[in-house]
Length: 310
Ligand SMILES: Nc1ncnc2c1ncn2[C@@H]1O[C@H](COP(=O)(O)OP(=O)(O)OP(=O)(O)O)[C@@H](O)[C@H]1O
Ligand SMILES: [Mg+2]
Image (tube, rainbow, N blue to C red):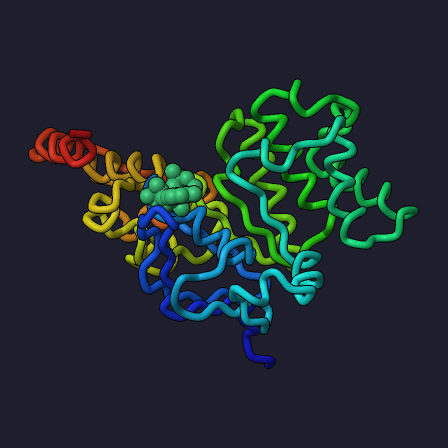
């Protein structure tokens, strides 16, 4: 078996903005080829800053950043060495307007392939493939300025996918999307991962995390915790201290627990919930027994106050 190949290795990375704001402190992180990783953290926790460092847009103030074997620092990120890197790493910005500046969506999606040296006769194939993947062929001739928020986000994602990167950095990709577009996007991202791409998603959308990542880093300036979604979402205190919560599906099963539903690891997504319930029904001879016992109301009360916002 071949050893896992790291695509990003960060050691003691800190970053301070020129204004003096310290956005990252001693971040250690290793991300491997083909992985699905979420960077979960509150507003201002440093997620965007971290992705900008991974993308070589800004150099770390301290510490070492290695990306696909190349050291990213002040000197290298502005050198020709970045040329190969740019074809392999795609960054979908939190603000889609940054990526959309051409007269049409088509031109914006073609921008990457054209500027990264993909032969002109092949560019159209890349653009059409990306538009098709996002289901936005019908808006390709529109001016990006005239798109809705969700359409802009899809166009910005298509503009990154058109270069067919092997690593995709996504900054709050589910923001602005309606439920059906959100579900579609999660499916697209997972399909890309299935085809071998590493997916690194920065988000505070706790409901999306279990569906988008196998491993989670909780970031609040420092790396607060690292592990599977199951591990991270089982630590309520840690989440609360960092202005985060558990997915809604998890909460629903906590309610069921108050009514006597018996299980150890609570599900975090609809798929996990289906699996869970199926197993529970099978084990219990075709039924799930819920009941109101002596402490049910008391437990529900505790649950309510646990999730109360102050
Ligand atoms: N260009 C900048 N100049 C100065 N300070 C900045 C700049 N960009 C971000 N910051 C500060 O750095 C910290 C981290 O910001 P960052 O945008 O990385 O957080 P985030 O986790 O992406 O937040 P959000 O969830 O709101 O997108 C914040 O305190 C922010 O105010
Ligand atoms: Mg951000």
